[in-house]
Length: 79
Image 1 (cartoon, rainbow, N blue to C red):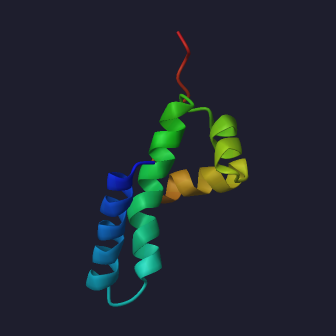
Image 2 (cartoon, rainbow, N blue to C red):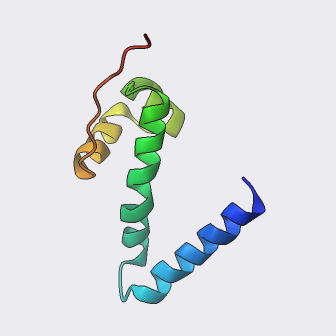
């Protein structure tokens, strides 16, 4: 990852800390976990097994997180 990305991420994280009275970590997760799950799931064309393996989490944990973040997870054909 490049330097600009790191600087932008640090800025965003500092904003979360500054603007959150409590539960800053949960706000971080709510903000970025959904985006990361969507990108990873899209990369693996909706394949939950490959996605969970890449993330290093159990497939059932992935399913719970997809439901929690209201992410649709329809598997796409490779055609």
